[in-house]
Length: 490
Image (tube, rainbow, N blue to C red; front, side):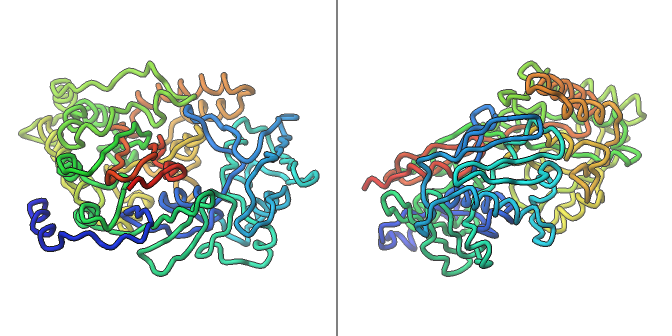
């Protein structure tokens, strides 16, 4: 496919007329611009530009003030005070405590079916306002992580009550406001501080997205490109490429109820058979770093000293030999993945490496909907996926606790382990963040021993732009916050 790029460029060498907007190429448009309902990454990232939130996160993923500071008056009582210099809604109205209460009250109402209700309803007993600037959250039970749960964009109360269609017509107090959403492939925003125009344009095919960048039809893009296209662009004049360390966690998951992948020695052999360094270098183009836990080591609850998983095919063969398998008499497993060409290529490399230690893998690739449905239903032996944008360590309950089997959570591998449950519950009951961090670190050591999944790597973020784009900073979590400061320098 790459060989076709020069031909296409010759067929359309003239740049499109410039209307002054900066154009950002997306692989997929947002599903909704209503933060009460957004769960997909693109929606969440664009909503951050349109709405402000009470709380954000610092570089170590600790909750940090955004719209408000807070005090913990008692373990069950948090008081938030809005910043006196906060921005107005794009309607011109001032954001007040009543808007905050209305936003969260809507989410907590089961009749509204917000996907964020489950987590918040477990914590919040009631919400009280004290004047325009102060909001009290009264909790059902002590929750050290509570401030970090308040990262949802705030909407105007009057428009919530009038059932305004925020999903297609967002109205927030963020740095950008909507100009137009003419169809399912274009979205235009305006930066409120200087009227800079920003267009998001969906181009699902990565080759076509690269062509549009080179022809001037888009000005920038982030991620969602295979390494060979990034290498191709690195040699093109007028194109800038920036890399930033990411925290998106790739892993191999296993069905713990399966007679083969439920055996620890099999999972250990798989972990030892994977040459992650070579995959990162030759397949991922050095745009990743090896991972040994769901949380990166610089997270406040991460484990900097967690031992590295070794690449040791001889040890993997020895484990498989004890189980009665060899290269000549391999264990047969099925490995499910999405039909994305790059993800399928990664799976093929893993397939080859496992074959060398006596594990013969049959790859099965599906469209995203079918693949994800099978994973949630437990219809797999092994699969590969990625966790994106993890901030709070309560993800461990959602992913590994015995009560979190779908649909109650994301324990898709049906991992049932008493020590894991104990560590999760003890961490949640800790009375200081420091004690909680130690317990979550112990949990990650334990999970690396039990291997309900095999950690692979944290994928980097790659920002690619034409040379008139300036001021963009790559966010660690892959958000588009760099667009808050981006400039066009023609």
